[in-house]
Structure formats: C-alpha cells, structure tokens
Image (cartoon, rainbow, N blue to C red; front, side, top):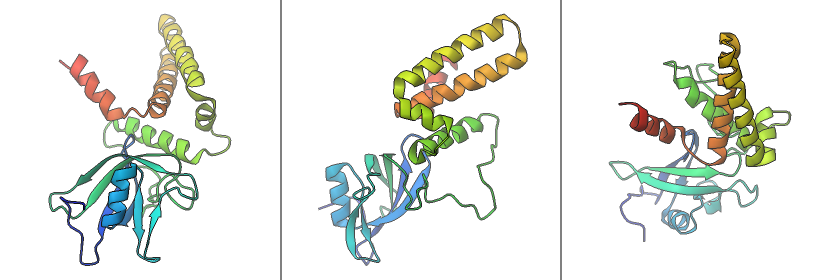
Length: 207
C-alpha cells in the first residue's frame, strides 16, 4: 500500500513528469495506487488511463521508457513530480515534451539574464537526444557516442587556446561557444544536470 500521498475521490493523483537532467516538464498524467506502486517497484513510469480505464507502461510499445530518478510529493500530498531519465520522446507526436506549444506564440523561453541561455541550450540538447532529428549535428554526436563527443571537446579546447594565444577576440568568442556546447552534450550523455555543475562551480570558485 502506498502511503504519504492522497488520492482523489476517483482514486487518482496527478503526476508531473520532469526530465531529471534538463528540468524540462515532459508530460502530465495520472496515477492510481497500483500504477504508483508499480512505478516505485520497477523504477519506470506507469500511469492510469482515464479514457481506457487501465494501467499503461510508458514506452511499452514505443521503447521510450522513462527511468525514475525520484518521486516527490507536494505539501498537500495530493500531487506528484516524477523525475526521470527519458529514453526517447515523451509525446505521442514524437516531440521531446508534450508541452511544445505556447499560447503567447513563443518558440523558446526568453532569457531573463545573461546566463539563462545555458539552461535553454541544455533543454535544446535534451530535446535533440530524445527526438534525434535527421541532419542535426547534435544527433550526429549522440549517434557516435562518448568517444566522438570527447574528441570534439578536446579539439574545441585546443581551438580556444590558439585563439587566446593569437589574441583574436572574435575567434575566441566562437571557440568558447563551441566548447560550451560540446561540454553540455557530454553532460547530457552522462546525465549530469547543469544545476549540479553550477553549484559545484560556486562551491569551488565562488568564494
């Protein structure tokens, strides 16, 4: 029996599914006591379909399973946030997230400060990994694996050194940007959240 959470009069509780690495909200579904118990037991997401009135295992047919990292409940104990590592798109349309459309007509989140672009880029890389669009350079990196990613990190680090040595500000800007991108791709492949790196950065060098 699942304790610590409250189900509604229909025996359901809403579950917000969030990418544990990028923090992007992937979907919102419902769980009953049985599906929540199976999610806890298998460490993969199970939900209750209100239309079909049956349990369903995310990725059972598509292969796009969601490995559970943590399950959190709110202060009222009547809603869940399920942190996952997705093996593919969350949406039946093939999109990384079910929340791909904006009522305000915005295609991307507007950066409120100069560092927010890192979070936006992290989410974009996560989307590319899930959807693997043909012709995308990010898709190419994920298809070729960690060795190719690390080779590119090494190459870009070398280019940064050369540009700095040559005192070429414009070239240095581009090379640092390329290095940041490839480091973020490696972080995604290793399931290392940007927040963890930024927190470590402050702990080690923010004093």
